Image 1: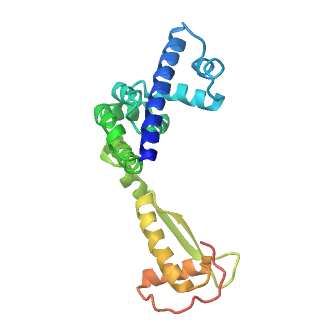
Image 2: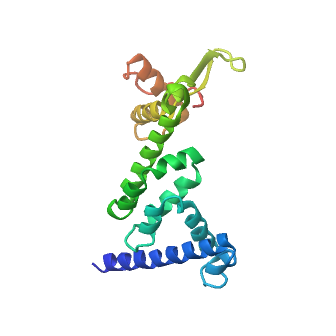
Image 3: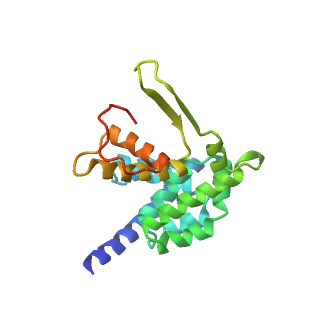
Length: 222
């Protein structure tokens, strides 16, 4: 109970800091005050790093008025506000405009959604935005899948070996990595998983054997 009380108090204090940061940033932008980082840091007593971070985030959140208001309300999870600011920093202008259409929804979720769930939902929302903005009717995941590639040919450096390299989209890559890792751990038993286990695991998965016993002792990178 005490921990919950402390966390509620921290959210209120964080809200006031963000309210002051927004005001300092507005003064800086209008030319009526010094740089917001100086107002918050040198004069306001915050550390230089935190002062700059709050000032930067105030600018990043300005295109999202409902989110900005929620961030300053003292009820939002600070981690969620940080996540929105980080996301805005990495978006293009069209992507920021598209995310702005969810301003009211995001503002509500800042307070109602636990940080872990909020971060996942925000990533999904950004992915949908990027898919929708992809040109020629091709979604972002379709483009990544089209650009996936695999090369397999006899090695020029090691006789009797094949070289294998390529790229795969993140969604199928994550699934493949999980499958290979699980099979490699089975092959390794109680020992450490090495690159050879992963290559043998991939072969087992592709040939649907999975019964090959201990991996042969060859040095293959993966």
